[in-house]
Amino acid sequence: MHIAATAIPEVKEIRPFRHQDPRGFFAEIYREDRLRDAGIDVTFVQENHSLSVERGVVRGLHFQIPPMAQAKLVRVAAGAILDVAVDIRRGSQTWGRHVAVVLSAAAGNQLYVPEGFAHGFCTLEPNSEVIYKVNRYYSQAHDFGLAWNDPALAIAWPVGADTAILSDKDRRQPLLADLPAYFAQ
Figure 1 (cartoon, helix red, strand yellow):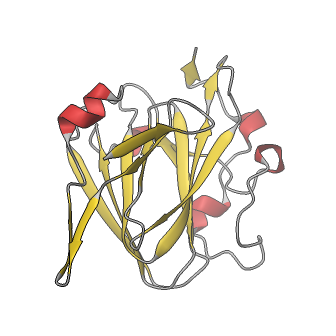
Figure 2 (cartoon, rainbow, N blue to C red; figure 1 turned 90 degrees about the vertical axis):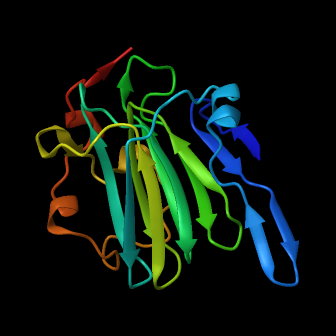
């Protein structure tokens, strides 16, 4: 597997090698030793799976605060998404900046999102299925979010506010400027 830093070095794109033959392919999508060698030294404890039926579904930007902050390893089992990680570590040199990567079932690539980042995605194809591992269990008391379309983030989403399909919760998230310093560097 090939593991590369993105524009924010702590966020990494992972490209498993696919061994193909006439039947299809085989790929190792998770290898603890290879991830650890690349600086991703976490133990994943829960795996989540979401299906978004329509193109243009936006989920996020979500995060959990300490002591239940989560790192995520995100991949797409069907379809494609624009996957986004926003640095919300107040005092970080990259605070408020983001990384956006297209993840697809066809490419088989993944994104590692460390603790201290808000995470979200927009479906690029109908019936997109996203599977992600987390290093801490879900905790409703520690679950927070950030406005997906905050102008200060300058994320080039493939949908506008008038066409994005959102949950009520995601419509009411605060702007980055109004977010408390949950993660301080």
